[in-house]
Length: 536
Image 1 (tube, one colour):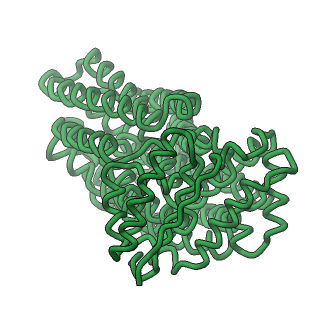
Image 2 (cartoon, one colour):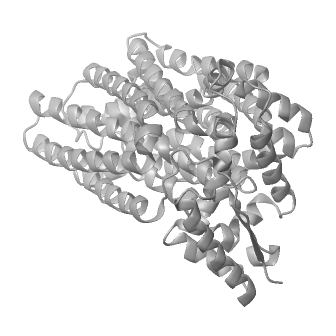
């Protein structure tokens, strides 16, 4: 059966949206962003705990007994130690996919509440651990909390935010991640000299973000999109009026209802997003988080104390340098909040990618010379400076944007699945990096930074060729932006139109797209209705 394309030309829909940025939506976004604290705290805590002598003596005595003249690039090359760090991300990947289902079935709020519960239970297990098996079990449970929170929170923020500040509010999730990392690094520095149980205290304080997310999510309303999708139309309208600060929200609410109806008429979100019609969304949701991890950022965040020791610093100095790096991370994410809706996503992708590339090349060269000239404090300080500049470039570009853009690109019928797939991809490759990096550092030494630099080149090229600009475009209109205007994806989707008659109709939508560009019509006015068989 052939698909059909219906074209109407109306005033740009987001110009009809009433409302303003209210205190309510800012408070709601702030509480919801606490989901990022879970991911950030876990990313930041393990590197410092691994460097804690008491933790090493209890769980990894072979590392604690290394002679002073051991190759610092290889001191921490232990697969079980890497497994304790990285196993969380395998369960997080599974939880992210599960979160796509629970977000649709029970709502975004329910998923975030569950995340707080899992993270709290996992925190108790790791803080009370008496052997490696208990550590791994606790980290796996923590992973379920991290995966659910990371899937649901960007989705929640995207659907609650007004279109004109959607980028800034969504970056609050990444800001919470960086605050969690910074807090964990500061706590590790403070507990380093507490004998016997300092590392347990570092683990236990992870219960604070878990409690914040759990209690905060209980108080939050669910998104209008989720409420309407679950048949709670009146409640959804009331929530939209509340967060927009006015009664007249009918244009926006009608768009939400239309999008939900489209969702109901389609197959499951995961089946839908696999169809050729949604290959652009699927590709971006997979490749952005893939490239984010192969930028090398989590290798730096997980094992920064070990890297700084390898660069020539003492253990306490390396911990302090890690705290400084964490503060740079937080400050740079604030820059992203200020600029993402002004300069656009693509500009920040390009600028951040160029900055990261230069810094990775510089760090590789400096570590190479540092190995030839050991105990050179000036070289070590320069390495740390370039790593901080690298982290800054990531924090205002690929850090927040690799979470933001997938949640914007996906349509209402694929959004929960798209964010779940993006989160799952992120965690699978986080696991891979966490498991392999210490061995790579041992075998490749400075060359590992050139390895990551090569991926930075590839990912910047990918954005330039295949990721459209979504600044200021309502999420309901982003799909038509891809379908009708992008040089590559419009051709991919065009093949989903099927028959000759639908092909002609699809081509006519391209004509309407010209009117969009000239301001005569909205992207949302180009509605592409494709038969279910052709979607798959």
